[in-house]
Length: 226
Image 1 (tube, one colour):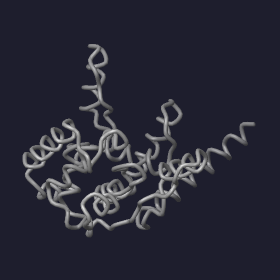
Image 2: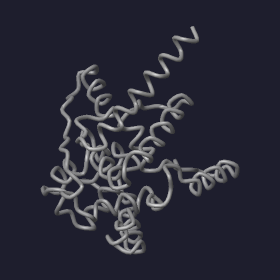
Image 3: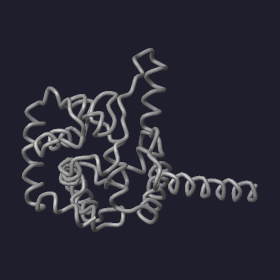
Image 4: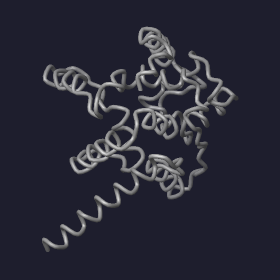
């Protein structure tokens, strides 16, 4: 029994290392979250077509890269996968009974969306931390951001900034303006509830907040820190 457990653990470590090292350079053909979306849509008889087009970092507007950092993880260049500052804020809000928002970093979101399943459990969280450590250790910050921009969901069945830009703005991601990039980032908390093409008051308000944050970070020169 012990030998079997050790064998499975060894196999998991080798497999996870192989996957992380492979996607350090290779474009991601499909993420776990995309596969889950396709399976669910097929199972329920809904349309299972996905909008997804991989775009290398050089073909993505720097405004898009800056917008997701401003919206989701402003300390991304400085932490090692877990933002303990934001985590302490969340724990404080929980103790005070105040509403909270997740403190997941971009790296944690890449780990979850690329390799794991949806849902909440200690097992999934533990695996998320494992993959986060591997990504931070084996990938560059720019690569993590590149993959995030390509696999994040920006609307129903729409994954990645290239597909989202073409769907909502009829242009490639390379030509996104600061305002358009901020609009895309504004729906990230819940891209199935908030819409880029029919923005609610909340989305427009959040877009303006993200644009202010982009300016306060110093504009696209902030990306030089990666």
